Every structure is written in structure tokens, then in C-alpha cells.
Image (cartoon, rainbow, N blue to C red; front, side, top):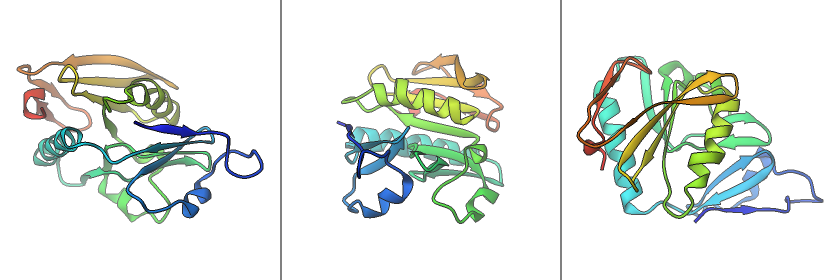
Length: 186
């Protein structure tokens, strides 16, 4: 279960990216949302399995010049620092030297819903990724075995594009030409 650590670290100020340097390398995922620290334990095997399978599906279909990666951060600013389960970026984005990708680098962010705290992926990250301007966000939900595709409708807001169920093959040209059946993920 993820937990938000509030109050803020030192003297009541918001958490910032440099504070992460003082946290232990303990396998937990540390993210910052509007100055609040979100700490998530390592995922369970079903989460890892869905992430792995989706990554492999995407990698097999990705064109040259596109990278499907896992657990690298999106650096919005010092008080907003997110770590999607999967991301799709142009290969040129790997040449950066910062703490994470700029939101404008991302073609897609993907989260596999945590059964212990689905609100993080369904509400918190949906809002944060939209405000950051990430053009597409996928939510992989093991509870109902669906893939929810969200597209940036207007600045700061996603619209549901489609919810794909196992046995349905969804085809799209974004972020590159692909076909996915959630049955291959779960």
C-alpha cells in the first residue's frame, strides 16, 4: 500500500527532488506530487507480470527510434517527480543528463493499478500526468483485466478513448502502430 508522508520534511517546506538523495535505497518507489512524498513498496508478482508482458508486447511492435522503458522518472519541477511503471519516449530522450525525462519527452505513460491503492493510478496520476501534458496515459487494471486508454483532450485533462477487454484486439497509430489484446497482458 502506498503512503503519503505528510508533514513535509524540514521546517514545513514541501518535499523536493533533492530531498530524495537523503532517502534510503530500500526498494521502495519515491515520488513527489505537489510537494508531498508518495512512498510505494515493491510491487507483487502479478503487477510485475503485467508490466513485463505489456512491455514485451510494445517492444515487439515499436519502430526504431522509440524506447519502451520501465521505472525511469518524469521530472516536471522540483516538487513534482513521477515514476510511471512503463514509458515510451524517443530514443533521443535517453541522451539527457537530468533526474528524469521532461514531460514533453513522453509519448506515453503506463501504470498498472495497485490493488492496495488504486486511487494513485486512477485519480492522482491521471491528474498529474494530464497537467504535465503527457499526451497519452494507459491504465492497466488487473481487477477487471482491462486496458484503459486516455488521451489528452485539452491542457490538463484526459478523456477516455477506449476501455479494452480480454479477447478484444485494439489497434492504434499512437504512440506508434500497434495491436494489443489485454488477454496477452494478464
